[in-house]
Image (cartoon, rainbow, N blue to C red; front, side):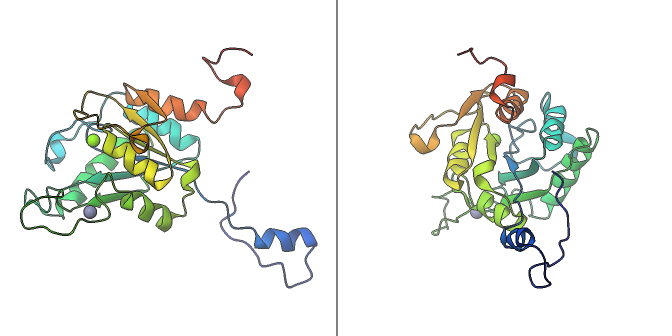
Length: 224
Ligand SMILES: [Mg+2]
Ligand SMILES: [Zn+2]
């Protein structure tokens, strides 16, 4: 059902009981897919902000289009310690956003928001207070969800390392690890366990979309 952008107050002007009930129901919240950037959407070039060196990983554009067409909002949530470590200014991230937007526009894909953690990793010299947004903490996801009215229990986090998974799980999302060999520590635990592990981004999108279908339509499900 289509959502209407505006609603007319009906409860106090003699509207029906159904209309009065309707009025008390919260507007339906959006579902979203939160996306890690480096090693998930684009080739990982450490500390890179040069737009010419930003390239999508195979199948990412078409897969995001599929998620968008299914009604998911798309958000990028990314640790960018290069800001705190003086590798590049925070303003350079605008160029990164513009380049990713440009690459995805070819697929008709719109990123609804970018959330960056510009803070250093814990233990960096000269820092004492850990921020609440650096993944594996869930701050980027929680703030984005609040700002954009996202229902976290109907949303997903997709990333290439277990810190992405922990952030998503802590935020209350379902999670998918795209294991491209980038996780090296494999520190385990319930909160670092994804709902699915795949090896290419398109398989993550497929997993999310398969989960939305009525059970009988799902492929790869044994009968009975
Ligand atoms: Mg990554
Ligand atoms: Zn932070």
